[in-house]
Structures are given as structure tokens and as C-alpha cells.
Length: 130
Image 1 (cartoon, rainbow, N blue to C red):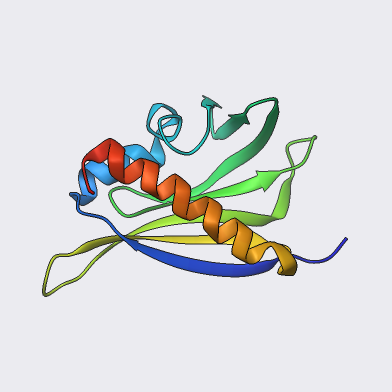
Image 2: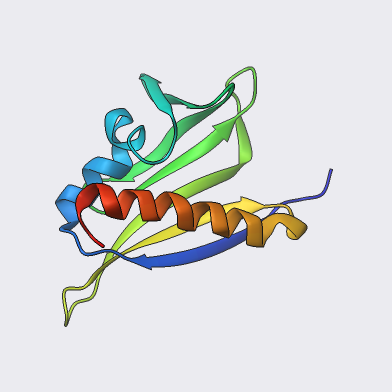
């Protein structure tokens, strides 16, 4: 198996950081745009898409700013991969954007970025930021 490479994409979002944080840090918020359904038990989140599911551990969070989920294996042990959603606020303009940090196989990075663009587009529609 190839090692995955890290990539980052930034999306401008017309929203308050507080509202945006609710959509990136809670199971109910994430299930509205990121996955078909999201369940949490303690620090573990289960992301469900159609008939597949992935489990991640909420590795860190900073209220109003960012969340980091580490993917875990079948025995709930951390893998080396994670995804992070980081809310950025420009000090001068107060413009808000969402920075996504994720991993993908080298030949799948553009496909993975496209998937994020679609998901963030759903998020923008949800919060009225279009």
C-alpha cells in the first residue's frame, strides 16, 4: 500500500466562526454535510456513508477554532492519518475561511480535493453562505 500524502485546501465561508464550529464539531452538525450519519460515543465518532463506515477519534479540539479527527483501525487504535478542520479569521477583514487538512494516495489527491469541494459546497448551502 502506498503512503498517503498530506494536502490542505482553504475555503472562504461567509459565516460566524461560532456557527461554523457547530457544524464541524458535533455529530449532528457533521451529519448534515460531511457524512450521511455521524454517531459519537465518548471521543469516538463513526462516520457513515451509504453502506460504508469509518471510525475516528476526536484527537483534539479548540472551541470555536478547530477539530482534528484521527482515523482508527478495527481495534480502535490510532492510525497515522487524520483530517483537521480549522476555522481561520482574517485579523483585518474578519473574513472567515475553513482550512481542511487531509491525506490521500498520490494519484487520488485531485479526486479527494473535489470531494471536499462538494462537501464544503453543501456546508455553505446549509449555513446560507452562497
